[in-house]
Length: 227
Image 1 (cartoon, rainbow, N blue to C red):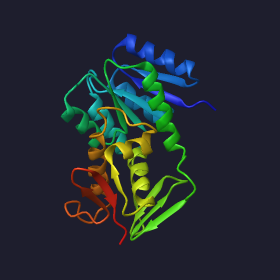
Image 2 (cartoon, one colour):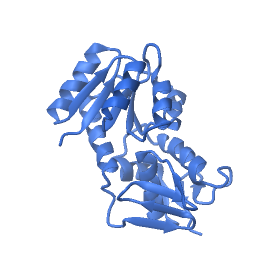
Image 3 (cartoon, rainbow, N blue to C red):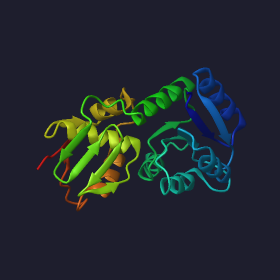
Image 4 (tube, helix red, strand yellow):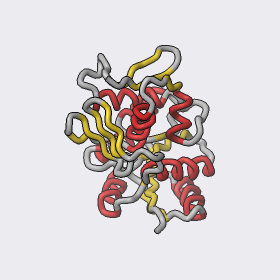
C-alpha cells in the first residue's frame, strides 16, 4: 500500500511541484495551505510523513510541529526559506526529523522522504532489542524505555540512539551518524546532529548536563558509554 504524505505550504506552485514528484514516485499526497488545516488533516488522515513549511499564515510551521509532537510521532521534514542556522535548530529541537532549505531539489526531497520512511519501518539491522544499563530499545517496534518507563522519541532520534548504542565506546563523527541515519551525509546538515543529541539527552539522561549515556568527544563527535 502506498504511503501517504501531507504537504503543508502556502505557495500553490511549491505544493504542485512537490505533489507531482511524490506522486510520480508512487506516494499518495494530501495538501494543506495553512497551519490549522495541516493540524486537522494530520489528525484525521494520519499521514505517514509530513513535509512542513515553516512560514505559514496563522499558525506557523514551528507551532504546527510543536503541537504535533505533543500527540504524534509522525515523521516531519521541514521546508524552510530561513537560512539562519538558529531557525533550523529550533525546528529540530521541537522534534522535526529533517529539513530541506528553499530553493530545493525536488529529487532530493523525494530521496529524503524515502530515507525517513525506511527508518520508520525499521530497516535497522539484525538486532531486535538493545539493552544497556537502564535503557532498552526495540528496533522492530521503534520503542524506547528508560528504567522501564517509555520514552517518546522521533524516528530520527531513535535511529541515532540505536546507531550509537549498538557500538558502545565507538566514536562517531557527525558525518558518520548522518550517513548511518539518512544513508548519506549532505553538506551543511552535520550540525543538525547536535540538535537531535540535545533532545535525546533531555529525554533519556538522568542529568542532561552530565550525560551518562551519550558523551561528546570534542572536535570529533559522539560516543555511547555502556556502564
